[in-house]
Image (cartoon, rainbow, N blue to C red; front, side, top):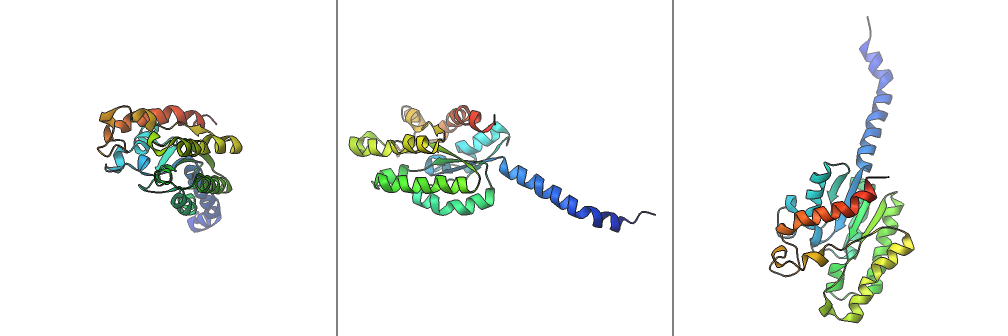
Length: 208
């Protein structure tokens, strides 16, 4: 008669290794969005935010994890990054940060330094950084807004990473897509943003 205890004892290490491998593969096939209120779903249900709509559109192939927090600066995103990388083990990280820094008039050099640290941290975790272009309203002054905007293509070129278009430039043009504060996209804009991000991100994460 077969001794099932012995069978389980001999096969347990293999089964454990197989489960661990499957778990790691599933975790690796993840796009994490590291952003602020533009991606967090400010003043709306989390399920309405564009990263969640993109996750449904992709049917979790790959999975989209929204790690965005309203009000976050680049420095705050940097502080949260190690824990997020450990928790989600993403293969790609979309960096959508900097808007709050710019609105508060932080020095462009400081913003750039913190973005560099985020990119370096993502690469150190064997993940691939994707950088979203962020722009400020023109009323912040041409000199500052240009210095701020130039940070993103500069880093994308130096690190040889994709620069994803800033979806708010088109959302601003439709008042019905904006919340009353004139800063944040409304729920009505989220499906359009998800479609735009699908077009921009799918070629980067689905055809490797």
